[in-house]
Amino acid sequence: MKMTKFAFTVLCALACVLVLTCASNQGAAGGAGKFEGAWTWGTFTDAANKGSSRVSLIEDIEMMGDQPMMTYNISGEITNQYEYGYAGWYAFPDDPTMDVLKQAKAFSFKVLGDGQTYFVMVSTSDITDACYHRVTFTTKKDQEMTVNVRMGSLQQPEDWGIKKKFNQNNATQIQWQTTNNGKPGTFKLKIWDLNLYK
Image (cartoon, rainbow, N blue to C red; front, top):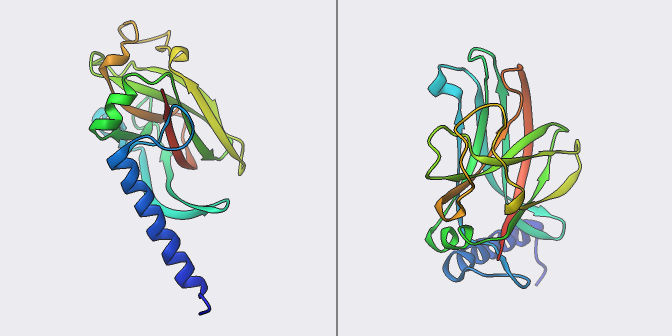
């Protein structure tokens, strides 16, 4: 029986959902030490600081290369209504993934970006002023790239915040944030294939 393009797309989507379910239930997948995990994604802005920056996050199943993947399309606008305007998004792990996050040596994700620079950080419960340990990465406009982050490379900002040693055992989630710091402008990128490495 000849398969239509629509039917193939539906089957691919179902396969992707099955893969994600297995990752959630069983955890480890792929190569040695690689852990896909299960994450809940969300966004945040400078609204708490009376800012007007905005962000949108759309989950979708797309063909990335030759396989269907869950993707996260993020876009928004930074304003200077709050002096240090910002917007961001996060991936919150389920319990088995949280356990791995607290012990992982590194994590990676793929991104298709707009050429701008962003923060990626690991939030920890002992830091209450959002001065989380982080690194920056610069996207290549309209080009796919893989970002690899060693936990040992994460550092707090030098110019603000209460300084504390990185305590990975207190890890709660992975966050991304714009680096515009109140400079008005738009941003847009796609993220997928978030993995931890034990």
